[in-house]
Structure formats: C-alpha cells, structure tokens
Length: 252
Image (cartoon, rainbow, N blue to C red):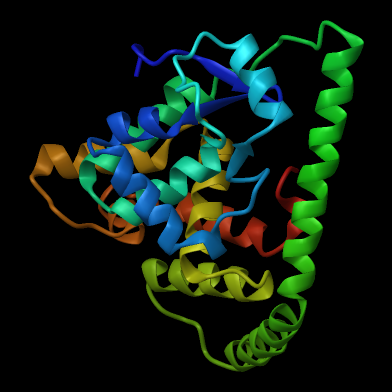
C-alpha cells in the first residue's frame, strides 16, 4: 500500500474509486456497479463523499490528481466505505488489501489544519451537509429501527431465560448475538464491533492475524470463534464480549 498517493478530505485519509479498485485487484466499473446495487447501505459523510460543483472545483485545485475536465461528479471513499466494498467483493485479496489499508493508509491521521477562513467555512458547510444526510438517514429508518428494537428485546428476554452453559466458543457466539440485538445491529456488524474492541484491548489486529494463520495453514475458510479457539484466545475474547454488554466498562 506504500505506492498509494495520500489524499485527504475533511481532515481524514480517503481513497478514490480507482485506488480502491487497484488495491482490491478489480476494475473501477465493478466498484461502481457494487455501489449502485447497494446504495441503501452507503451513507454520505460516513462511507463516502460525492464531490460536485464548488466542492469538486476546490478539490481539483488543492490536489494533484488528473481528473477529466468534463467530470461533474467524483466519489471519495472513507475507511468504512472501503470496508463495504471489500464486503461486496468478498475475495481474499480484497479482505487482505482492506486489512493493510487500515494498518498502513487510513491509520495515518492528518495533522494539517485549515489555513484560511475560506477553508474553515467550506469545512463547516460540508459538516452541516454530512449531518443533514445522517439525520435524513435516521429519520427514514426510524420506524424500522423501532420494530427491530422490540424484536431484539423479545429475543434477549428469551435468551435470559435459557440455560446458556456451554463451551466457551458457544458462549462467545451467544454474547455477540446478544450485543448485536441490543444495539439494533446485524450479526456481522456485531462481530465487526467485537474485532474493534478486541484489537483496542490487546493492541493487536485479530482480523489480519486470522488471515495470516489461514494462509500459513492452507485453510480457505475459518470463522473468528474457530480461530480464537485454536489459538487459545477464547478467555480473552469472552472478557471483551462481557464488557461490550456493559457499555460503562468498555473503556475501564
């Protein structure tokens, strides 16, 4: 990933569609097609920025990127946007590239501050635009979220009345499912949060280590609980899962 030209927008590292495609070993049209098929999953300001008009002219002036003169819309992808693209592709190369992007590209935070009043005004205007997009997204899904919350509480109550004694791997799976349902998340999103908390707690990258382990052992498919079991990390994983279920303890 060292050959990527660093690009920053809104004080964070971002990637162009072409950079995403090259990193994941595919072409830009596939990235565009995946985005168009799953637009409802992408939130502007969280997963991507769509530059047009004045914002595109500003970006073109400040960055040495060769853009077509007749271009009227340009997409930039955040770390979370890159994760969604890796998920859409679902290839080992895409996931490996995403892990390296997180470690070697997105992790480098910008220390540059706006140099002019105009810069600050533009950043503030963009922030308002991003906030409006998030609010609109929340309002659209409010009723659906309420229904999910009711269902989640019903399932959690049922689980609380069930004997959860089992092996550590089973207990970890149950705790992650309970965390996802309490927070109105998908099952996959619950595991994503678990990886983040685990990595923070033990200063590691569990996803990348699992990838290396599978490559070294010649394993094509292995779930995270399976990997934690064979590497004897389930006790640590259960402690993290317990804290996730008690938000006040996550950062203690």
